[in-house]
Length: 483
Image (cartoon, rainbow, N blue to C red; front, side, top):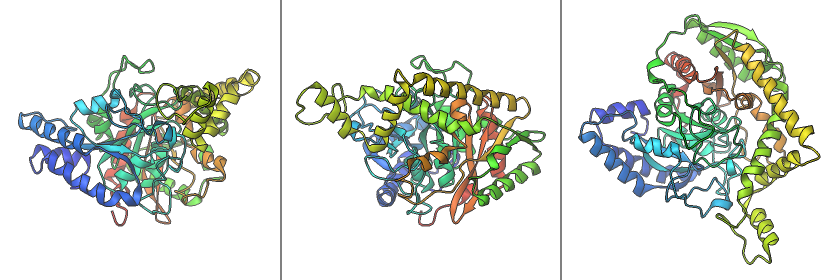
């Protein structure tokens, strides 16, 4: 049963080939057996899962039949789950049990999903390798000596290893798409505001967005359907109708205009990945797409702008973790200042501390105009580039990452080298655009992803293109050896 996709599980449950309880027990046993190799989970929720599975089976027995009813998933451990530890991968929140459910968790629970647990992640979603977690690094199931990508590496590794069919994730600068590329999955970052951020512990509020990680575009469509929608509790949520994403999967790609930015194929891109991207372009041309070269001239400025804006917002968002109200508190503080300093110094890891310091510096009185304000102006230029490009093309295609997954620890001494791996993904977050990564082949046995970007609220178009591509290729069906 562990090889089934979400869509296949929905059909199996509807046809009464198995029950949600049977499936849940099988996957919990598989997680217990295999996850010690991967470290993809922080918390397992066996009792909750079994009670939700029984409830889903009872709903089906009464005639209810939804695509997510009884489907097992997991949540990235920054979505608040009532009464369950929500750690954000940090010592700071190791003892925090959320008093409420995030909107995403509540919506998916109402749709009948079964929560198997909370997945490992880079601390406070800060990282591209899932090595900064307080609970240890996550391993890539395709090669246990390599990273799975981050910050949603736990969700990605668990789905890629067939421990469960799909999981929630978040993307601040590529944290859904990059792990998807590294683990041979399909991952979708929706338009900013499409999925509620309420109850999703913030890293950078103007960039964070929740989305699905699964093996196929069809599964991403099913999970996104349950996640998306306006939320009055979230001031950044946009009141835009949610289409039926599954209904648009089978549309023809005839005449679809695909833009390929020339800036994507410069120095820094592994030539083997470039070849796989070209192969993907040829496959889409066979399906009727028209390819056009375009330019995104301000892409070169995106990384420095992002790594000013995101740490600046993080320094503000993480100021609430002070040892007073909730979370980690140091022992025997001498006074209030000592309480603040030691609680934050002991509770936050090195990468989080680095980004807080960078952000606080960029927002300080003498440097706000020179750094933060200038970065926001660059953000506008990046968005303008995309708006101009989408006047000429329907979607934009390129590599998800410049390199395949690197070895564990390989970039720990050089954080900037790790930051540069986000070069193709962060522009979508700066502009608030939807982006998708789908499997495109392998380099040295490690998966490679191709990225698709679309205009605002055109997630259905991305899913349509990815689904048609996956009907004509088999990269997404490959399974890591041993799993």
